[in-house]
Image 1: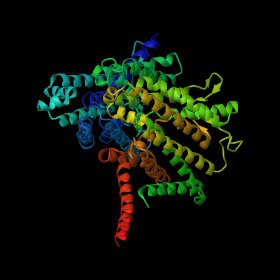
Image 2: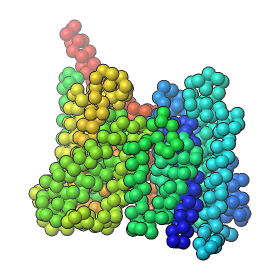
Image 3: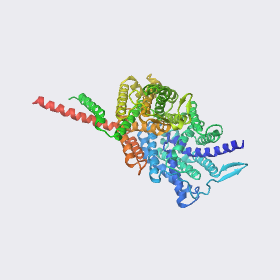
Image 4: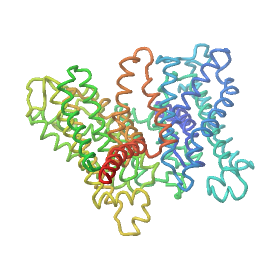
Length: 295
Length: 341
């Protein structure tokens, strides 16, 4: 019984980190109404930035956040500004331009393989890692310390993003644009700047997820693909565009992955995740917290 | 010569060159590259029926390739059936699966449809990787199936040289291009076009958009599954990661998108332009610059989407037409001049 509880808690911890990796995806969809297929690659870039920042300067991996977040924000902002903005300008009347899916896939190919060229295919683990393999023992249960910190980071990030969107003036402008871009433009909101910012924030959260992951996860050029597929499933499960939906979706996936192997072959959990995803798409495409208008 | 005659002449020329190529080209390596090029041209043309004409973005077509490959291989390994029969059975099975997946998904919007098809393709791969036996049928999980090259000949769909494979895939490619042409000229093609661009308007005019898309998907999945059988017989070894991979699904879709979705020449053109790039960069730079062809792929994809969203076939078709105009126009002027004199 204690094992089951241990698995449940570990599932929630890992799941919240999955939710954090998917947070950017849901933010970008919520505002731009497009699925960013390059999100996994952005996460990979975030992991590499965090890895090198921590390795080269020798600082604590979590302190690397002060470097990672601005870099990733700028990277996302520029990416949207140079590559995706022209499509929105060309296809003004289309609400969900499919072309963006294709262009972001191109970005995915380029980023993954550029990193393969530059850093090589080897798996890299953080060397000066104060948290490596650290466990916390509570009542006979072993909990991974870096995952615990990841959980804290995920909750703080989701809360901060939620607060920003709900309470600040800029956040309201972003939400207004996501509801109706023409009306928002008429109110004097610069639509493209809002898109740039939303993309930047989404990329920055991918950077935070990268920081949360590197203390216990290896970095390699195609690591993004692993989280990519999970990210799509999580955001559809939670409802595309919903911040807390992404966290909950992540926790559900984390629970399936950690609890189900107690009852069946571990490789079948992946099949369960896909089946669940298809079931949600067919039964309730708007997900747990999604708006019906968005599908 | 009139314009029509010139067009027929160029078609005949292309036909003669493609049928005569193996007589001149003796290198098995180049023949192999050409076979894969035709295979991808075939796959993208089949994808184009639903991805191009129906205006949706399916990203799970490798699942149909896998269904075709596994069906014919299992039937021939375990029951001694000719792969040609397995090919048809696999095609029919793919149609059933395609309709099953199409019924709920065609109601969804762009992004959701793409995600659903990805999940479907990946789901099938994970299933095959985890199943060793379905009843009496041996799938052999992630280890895949090997086809022992015992009996060669046309009935066994197995040959010692590469030339027969070349001609088979060439005939298949011509077949799918003909089907695409016929559909684009038919009522179904117009319905699909209307439903892809303006589904609401098409429905208001009484077009059953979902039914048309389902027919397109059924045809597309049937044809795609045939290529799976070809792939299995050509490589003689299939496993989930080779025939049901996400990479393959994406490559099929993106070759068509770069070439120009919704056109007849686009997918073939895309394969013609991109396959050699990926093959040769793998041959010459594979050891020093891994992944170079995918970087090229990504850059081309982005550039085409930004500057030529209807694909590369558009400027090339325009150039071809201008060439025809020049040739016929020049002759017409000549004829005019002669009659005046």
